Image 1 (cartoon, rainbow, N blue to C red):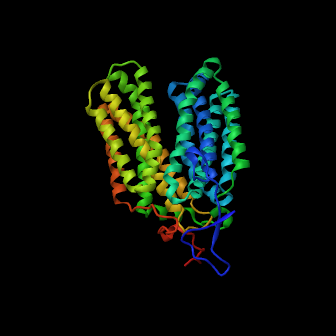
Image 2 (tube, helix red, strand yellow):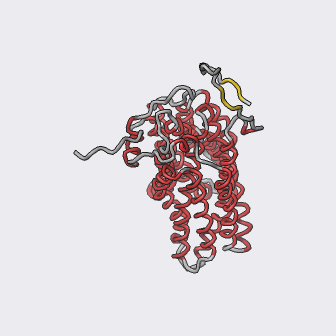
Image 3 (cartoon, rainbow, N blue to C red):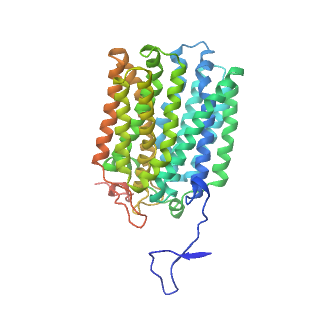
Length: 442
């Protein structure tokens, strides 16, 4: 069954037609099927990671290493995600999204199962590093497919649902992982690996490369470095990447790294209040994702990015200035709201950039990879920077540093152009983002 497409002139054979797209019920109504599939995959991947993460340091300590060395197993995973992001983007551009995603999840699954059999600390850290490479392949390919498959007016909402899958899985996983680790420190690795076989199968069977990618499967950017340099010249790209970096810096650097210490050293409260605070952040974050996505789709990406940075920055100032337990909880509630906005608008802006009509098939994976690298750099640099300030100056200095980072990201957002456009209106893409034929050397 076909229907006329509004706003498209007819031809000599009659009016232009397009297939009727079935309406999906509930949260995924009017969205491409890829959004529901990718949201389910993201939930499963985050659930598995949450199961294995709590027991990793304890498992590493069994090999007789120090606490710092044990913690480095987690850092190795994050570091290899950063190093693997750009190669993952090139794999996406060359082989397509669903193949890269399937391979990435399979690498994480196999490396996790083998990590459960580790007989030494060296084997464990090497296998977790390999898992980080697979994780980079998954995350870059999944977000590329998501942003390429969804029209501009729905990208914010789609990003909210996709991020929500990660959030729910990340909340559920540690509770299960804690119980499993109490029984066996090796079992979580096996459960994680087996659980990942489900999204790997889904990616292989149910997903296909985006239409734009399939239309020109071998037409791709020849010079990835030029593509990244071209992206950095775009104020919109710089704003989105800066917001992603600042969000990672605040969420991982402040919330995850020093809030647990702050609760004991400054508030003199039990560790249970750390868990309550984290729950407040997660609840408000989840509550903000869909409204934030709708705002990004209606009023634009730029105001949502600026609001998210300013709200998150305000939460950092509140942590420094508001006394007592209730001030602490209020600040974390505000952080949840701001972080929720930053989980949807920057990625939607990146989708607008790579989804422009001027882009060729087989491009964009490198741009998304570099965008995700910015967030990963924030998550790695944040704990180190704020931890140093806590030791050298004070907790308040660390909170103000995070607020400054978020403020600079807000300024980048203010200077950026709005990228939200109807699908019928092409987005202006910097010429350097479009592949150029090789020129003869001068």
